[in-house]
Length: 151
Image (cartoon, helix red, strand yellow):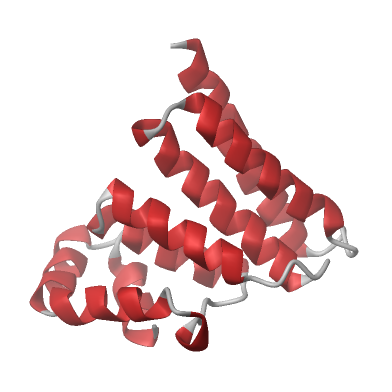
């Protein structure tokens, strides 16, 4: 994942370069994503910023259906432990819901967001930066779903 993190960091300042780097080894990156769907190879960065970078890369480089499958699988593998596992699960569910908005509609997206909300509510340390960032991402995703529902 570290190579993907390097590419993800380039997305905003130099999207064209990031895209070229991803495309030069696309088959290997997609293989790494496929392998990560298996529990014995599952590894997602635990910190909000690292997870967001990887999610942003996937958002830019993978199809919506592939992203939904990936975020759903990863969220299911996170331990809903009331700590970082719950935050990671909530973050991934939010990313999943945002992709579902475009593919499956708002009703399904709200179902996934409800799961994210449950994970966030289980978190014990509500004063941590990771909690606040995850909660903010949840509220943003929920707002996006409400706006889409209005259309």
